Amino acid sequence: MSDTEEKPPVAQEESEDEHKEHKEHKDPFASVGEEVGEGEDPFSSVGKEEVKKEEDDDEESHGEAAVQPPMMMMAAAEEAPAIRQWGSYSDEKITSAASEPSAKVDLQFKVCEPKLTMPDTAIDLVYWVYHVVTKANLEGWPENLRQPRRYSDFLWLRDQLCAAYPGAIIPPLPEKNVKGQIEKIMLNNLELLSYRQRALTKFLNCTGKHHLCKKSPHLKAFCSYEGTDWEAYKAATKKEISEKGPSAVNNIVQKGKEGWFKMFKKKGAAEKAHAQSADKAASDKKLEERKQYVKEMEDVMGAAQEKLKKHIEVRFETSKAMNELSAFLASTGDLESRADTVLSNDLKNSGIYTDQLSQLHHEQANKEMVLVSEVMGYYVGLFCGIKEEIRRLQKMQVTLYTYAEDLDSAEAAVRSAPGEKRAKAEAARDAAKKKHEEESHKLADALKLFDREWETMTAQKQKDFIALQKTFIELQISYGKQQENLEHHPIQPAVFSQ
Image 1 (cartoon, rainbow, N blue to C red):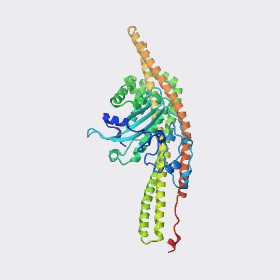
Image 2 (cartoon, one colour):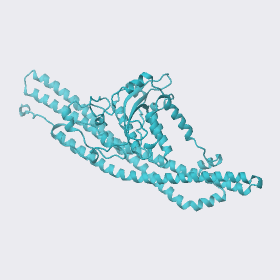
Image 3 (tube, rainbow, N blue to C red):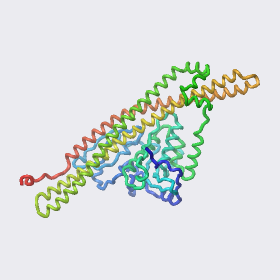
């Protein structure tokens, strides 16, 4: 799969006019495509369904969906869609623990107003630019921020957080768009854009709630820097990440691991490895077991989500077919009205009922997509991210071994060094020992952090999965009740007796 959206070689800068236009926009914490009225609280609209607006205020106030599982590190209640419900069932609400108002948070984000940006040259590719709006309640942060960011900037931010906090479980990003350039140019896939904005908003809100990530200077730069300052900051971080590693020879040993290089290991390294083998084996086993677990969960949840997506697609197709059928029935009823028959009214009423079924199917599909499928997709991404974090920890373990090799080599050099070179050899050994100790502490801290994050994730996952099942069941029950209570007129018996 390839996604050309995220890989244009040249970053685009805003013009002064565009920047001025951005600052004059209304508060984007309203739904995408909706404007906030004067005196309205913009936060009251956070997370509403962007695909369609609600026209009937009375109906919306009684029928807003309340189903929502308490997502891991997510402002889930704020992300629930406002979807109209039908018939007499509109007064009945589906309850959930996450429907309660959320407490005031340090950072709140909204990703909105996607804009297709055309390249300056023919060799560059088109890409989407989103506006990231931040409301901050942290010391040292401006209260309100707004900056344009592309998907690759979100990728950069997540990479920086993973590198800065080894062992931390960083929230996932939405999957890349695999539909390519034609999809972007045609501008027809509003559902994809809406999903991308919701998922990016969730990523930032989860990141802003993480006890380490919210203090990150990279997150603050992502939210506040603009233009050339932003590009310069990203370029500077690339240099900072490249740290001096183990010696060149031992780097090859690191990559080879159990290759033929093991026959050249010094006796001291072998004895040290044997002494640490029990602890290392236990740590390695735990990481391997967890990696296998998240891999299997990623596969199972991914397969389940694909099945659910097919189910939702069928609902959308059914809605479309019902809508076309209702139009056919209405037209047929108009034709029959010329003959002044009872059948005319029956056909028109059937058309109205079929149109209500069409809308009910469409709204049910939207609810299942946002409240169930996207939650499952979040966990698929989360499990994938945890798997990658475990691989980074395992790489740190191997890197620590190579530093141990460097230290053994330095100690051997001290033992064999003649008197006039002994001082230099001892200095090299002390430097190698210091580096080994630093890396050892770094790995130990990362493993401890990962253990804590794993326990937190496991506890939250159990709550979320229980809520997810409850949500899905309640959605089906509510759908059945709404279908039963749709208004319709009985067909006249005379039609069938003739």
